Image 1 (cartoon, rainbow, N blue to C red):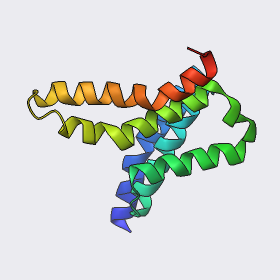
Image 2: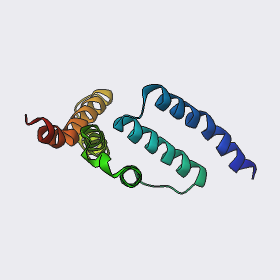
Image 3: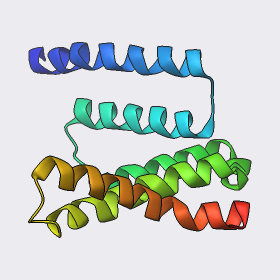
Image 4: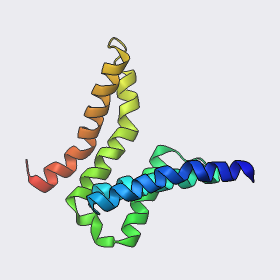
Amino acid sequence: AGAAAGRATRAGLPAAAVLLYLTAVGPEPSMLRASAMSGLALAVFLSRRWTTPLQTVALTAAALVAAQPAIVDDVGFQLSFGATVGLVLAAPRWQRAMPGLPRALAAALATSLAAQAGALPFAVAAFGE
């Protein structure tokens, strides 16, 4: 019981910070995604049942769509999830594909490129460019 109480205490501060930030910024789709993913990550931490990053993204998307089905038509939702899926699926592989670069530079490039690649189809569909 002591370890579980310690985990709950350690999760409380990040949960409060996420809720405070969401309240300050407002319920924009990208903030809803980030807040829901943070909440899910904290729940996983508390339960000690681990998930993969892709499972976390998928569960978060499913929960937000279940709560508000019309959100799937929101460009912010599409861009946010597209970028996040790009990060999860491509960034680690792309970073490993740059062995000649300093690690920090490879990580920065892979992260930026993966997020852009994930969001690009939605941006083209939404903005036609």
